[in-house]
Length: 88
Image (cartoon, rainbow, N blue to C red; front, side, top):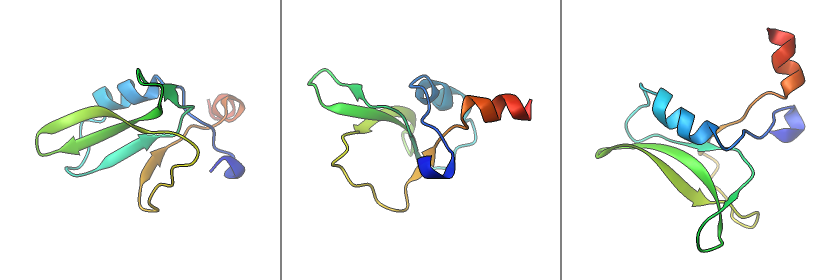
């Protein structure tokens, strides 16, 4: 995705997406492409927004570079700032 011109999101996208994605389909998980955060135990994590039977939630998922994600995962990226300004 980075090679295609997309950029990593700021970490604030995770909580914002969790609050604003009102019509997220049941069973869907969307991961936020971001620089990992360090969790309390020191493991790097990224945000994911999940909609399960018990409701919507902001979760953290393993975010180290050695972890391999399944190909069917949904990801949120952003456009580089220059492209965003160009479209406005």
